[in-house]
Image (cartoon, rainbow, N blue to C red; front, side, top):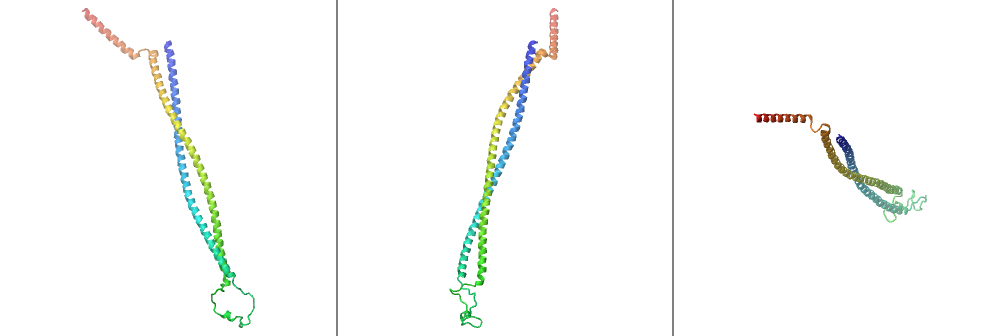
Length: 262
């Protein structure tokens, strides 16, 4: 009885210990498996966000290149137009400024009753002394000055727009690259964590297998002790069968003895 009590106590303690260890390992495996699954989902999301950000940056860069080329071409054309208009203004101003415009009421002695001389009545010809119609000069020069102003405004406006667009693109590029860099770092950390969790799970599965075997052994030992210490060496059915065999054997022995006597 003392042996049985001691061994049963040790075996039950071993069984409970292995059972608790196994349950703890299963809980750890479940927790780490769920964590690894969540990390893999987050890694996939980060990869998608990084790809989307890089695509957006690539498209924005392409648009910025085209926009800069258009702005540069517009400024170049405005500068060329400005130079041409300035040249035209100079030529026309020189032309009109050289004209002799008589504003007094002097009447030449050889003029007619309307004050016109023979030279005034002569047909107009284009020679080196012609300086155009003075009454039209202000309108032409004014129109050219408006055009010149338009070229100036276009050059200034487009230059300012280009500067603003370049600054906005630089800000967008920096923010996007910083975001991609941060996501890349986060992704690498999560990937390292996944590798660590995978190693942990491999070890936990090995420990679970060992604990399961130890628990099975403890249960087998407990069953063996139960038969010996609690139920006895034989169960009731086994004792009945054995007694029946003994009776049959005794009957046969008795029959043999009787036959021998006869």
